[in-house]
Length: 250
Image 1 (cartoon, rainbow, N blue to C red):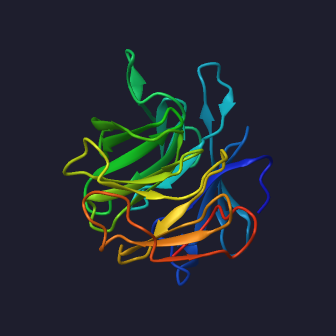
Image 2 (cartoon, rainbow, N blue to C red):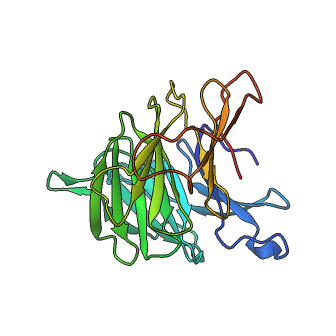
């Protein structure tokens, strides 16, 4: 599957199952291109979603995330989230501004994640802020700040109460609790010295969080053993390569 330019983000269909080929597809966004839907078995292009600015010029999404029920594709743009219906490719979409009247979440919406238990989603911005919004109409719930760089990745814990955020040129992975969102619950230390997205992931039970780093090291933390304050140490670290490890899956 070859995109036309630098790939900004990709995501699997949220209800994807290899046993059901119709659900086996992945969305991708690249510079100066529409959002593409690719067949995971054949690599063929299934559909395209196009977003246009006020000059009717094509604009590329910087982040992608399917809703948990698979009905919608949420896409991050500058100060805006656009929502396409998965069943209707084309240019029709709902536009939700994240910044208006000098208030809200500014900058490019660089990552989006849904709570697995509550009807809300979180947005990370290159403006170094985290925003929480209601799924149904995008009403803002909270605006958080704590990172030194632009947010590059978000991940919710299976319990739906906690979520994790990481940023570029920022050595901290922060854990947040929706029940006390005023400040981070605790932080984890990793090496991130570039603007690359350094992804991290939780295992299905939510007990272990795994992250790569700029120096190539992979670290594993036990989220269940972590206290409510402080900086927990990894339970495992290893060096699979001598170059940056920017993607991990557990």
